[in-house]
Image 1: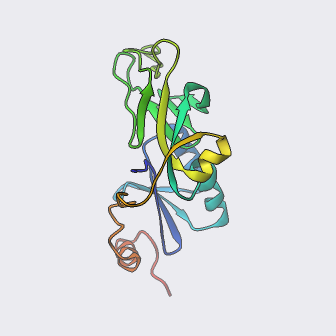
Image 2 (image 1 turned 180 degrees about the horizontal axis):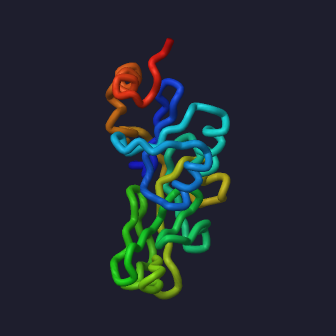
Length: 185
């Protein structure tokens, strides 16, 4: 299963790579996050507050695939639908197709060919609604009471990140070399 959010602890920092969302980015800034253009990640200090924020937005633990409907959507703004911190649908223009990030797929129903207005496009299901499946962390699914339809066994799991095969010490050394984090005393 491929997650849409990659979280990596490197030294005393947490790197979060997630699809763009204006509302999530605002939350990141308010919590002290800094966007690193070079890595494409939000960077936070490794603190209890950061752990709480990550757990609230995405949960933790094993990856599972769950069913969600439009009734589970917690945020509808900027042409996006979110369930917690997970983006489930994005429509950039009223007459464009709906984009769905990694780990999201339509199970029942479909998307209307257009939705919203020119100024405020939005994902719009066809007919009586839509059922999607999305890859999330188990604790997130359980907290929202979402139906789990598949569990990640790890047998064919993709690496959590392109950095997963590189030792943390090497990544930390490169981050220090580039000036992303100060050199230890």
